[in-house]
Length: 486
Image 1 (cartoon, one colour):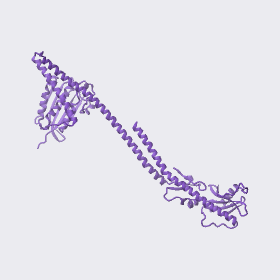
Image 2: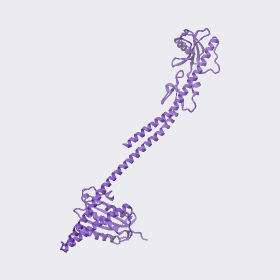
Image 3: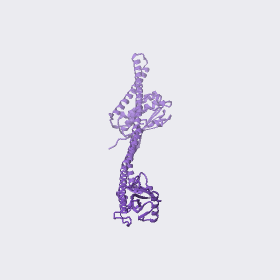
Image 4: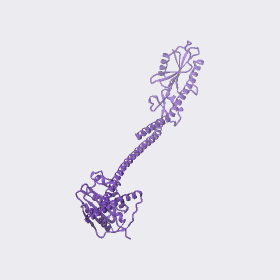
């Protein structure tokens, strides 16, 4: 939930940042467009006022004289007219279809004529605009008086293409990212309309400018989104790791608790037997020599069992602390295996096991710690005895072998016990691990023996593997490399 919440916050911040960047990048362009529109309107008003007032002065001073515009005259004023409501005087005809334009101008001025001779209709001091014709055209009009004091309307027709070329385009700096387009073709994201009399044109950002701004916004947006996704992935990975670690710690705590309980039981059982049979012998109640020998054997066997368990725990503690050391010396593996087998023979006979030992001749010597190799073999034999039910069988084979180009000795320990399930084999050499199988749980154990065996074999640069089938038995194979000859 925390990761999702942070991702949502990150996504929201990313969107806000994108919006902020978009507004910031486009706001400046919109401001420039508005300023250009204002400048265009001011320039148009100034020029049209000057032009129409010059025509007004000409009409009053020399009404019959032909109109000759000055050099500065705006080229976009295409046609000049004076109307008294009845007669239309053409001072400068339109360049395209003059007769048709004159008819349109005469009709519009006659229809909109206002007699302002009364005080409530004073002459207009600023131009007003009339829309004529189709497609729409614009007249800039100014009310005045002729030489005799009669009201007249002075009108100038606007050529929009010339207006765009002569007045509007020079106001747009080159490379400013803005362009003039017909108002009916103005596109997104926005367009600044110029209004009358230049209302047929609009200012909008160029495609190149829009693409650049989108690119400028897209890169930070992708960066923020990428950082958000990275944060989300990191949080999810961290949560997964913490959950896995917590589960592992809980499982380890449960295993250790189980280990303590099992070890306590493992310690109490041999101690109780040693104490019981020792007290029985001490009391003198056992008169039969045969019985005394049997009790001595039980005490010796349980002492060996107790010693083995304590040695396992101590070795495991040394390994965990990194203080376990081995004494490597040239060793006759056949002798080590034979001695260990003979020492454990009493346990096998006592449990009614069928057991065999087979050792090849001329085995190569190895560099090994005799006690450590003996402990590995004892742990494997002990497990075979512990996890065998009806068919009690144990076989040990020692043969010459070569693995990965290395000569050595292969020790195989085979039983016909309950076997190991496939899912448990991968965890078999983990410390404290005991299978969840009820047949395993019914037997006491510490779960340390196989991990110790694996550690010892690895320390000897050897390898250890297992082959097993449920109810069919298990075979452990230990390969130990031969000592290098000089």
